[in-house]
Length: 584
Image (cartoon, rainbow, N blue to C red):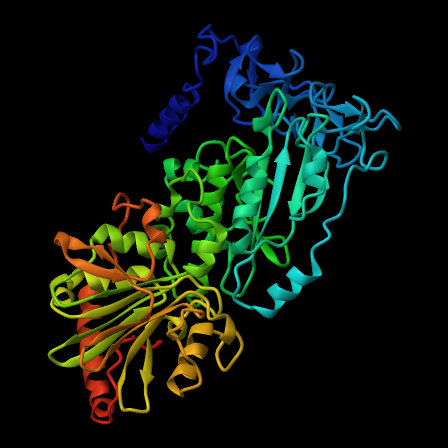
């Protein structure tokens, strides 16, 4: 009985062969049935096609049509043009003699001199004629010659932000102006620039003080060509132990499409040459390239010329901000959510131009804010100050328990504490400082305000705005700390204004400006005092400014209790408690 049932089951299984062709719905005939080499599916002889290369039969879903001819080719045999991506059969593909990549008939070139077949990446164009050449027959290039002085400055400042740019121009332009510009270190042809006058330029090592000059140069570039948008821009940020490709991956990942476009980035909408791939940081088609010894390359940018110069300005500021953010956090200290939250800051909005002349910015680095009891800046003012001075923020204030301080190299952490305890600060006189780093690393020890003690017994906190040029060398890498140390010991006069502006708050809550103060209107028409108003020209607002994820209440409770308890012994000796969180 069981044998009979098993036999019927087997017969039923054998009858499951399709009765019609799944491709054309025509009845299948046993003598005219083909089977796909890949999926083994049945089909009629008319629907089964042979691969022109290997001769095996495939169903339509496992065959591709050659883009250059009507032949069909299986995916194992298909070749792809390295320039346009077209599918090619064996008869239509050609191998580039320089890189051994396949190239189609529409994309390939032939060297005028030696006749080598070239792809778009390997072709070189002559300035003298309209002919294509290989790299060996024509070399329109100058190897980057980096300034020894810039190299020396960079090497002597371990935590200084530096950046280099590769500027591609796909079309006619003023070659001489760019080749002879002091910020251009080298230039070369680039196979991705098909226009005969297209070149790629490499900048010298750039500091933040060069941002205006490089923006002005890019703003002066006008490209004459049919497709200038086929060019791109690459940014090389300085590599340190804390600058890793994965951190920069998450920084790019944290940008929305609108934010990326405002930074002239294209990985969110056209990623052929800049695909954002986690864990894959090598090659010419990745957004983050980790193959360079001294830099991490961001390949996501669209062209840089007079049409996009304002976005370059903001992109440089964004890169500087993220670099500083990474540099202030030890490895494994940041979560991916922290980085993605930090990336879309208000600095991603383009500005028409930098509003402050270079001289003004050099004298007005940082900003100090003081307020008497009952006065507060507006939230918008705080954010503007923070965004234009992003390298650390600290506040000292006086309440019924005495004088206290909180500071953090992460501005948003300090802002979170202020916003969560707004009424407490409004009821206290305070001294607040936002830092723009010039000398010394971005870290807690260099974040203002600094503790001081005078020979007359006065103690408190003091903050500095500007550069103390006379004190750039000393015990500390921070010129501010060196100047304050000299002032405490009676070796410096900080009231003449030559070393910047200083303000202090003493152990009784008295605020004093040693030099330079400007009263402005704060919240509810109260009066606050600031060291400068350069920050007010930038127009940041609360849109997109997110402080979620900062454990502000825990920070406040821990800082207050820790600072109060630890400060009692020092307070008895005339010092003041410090709320600054200890490194863990």
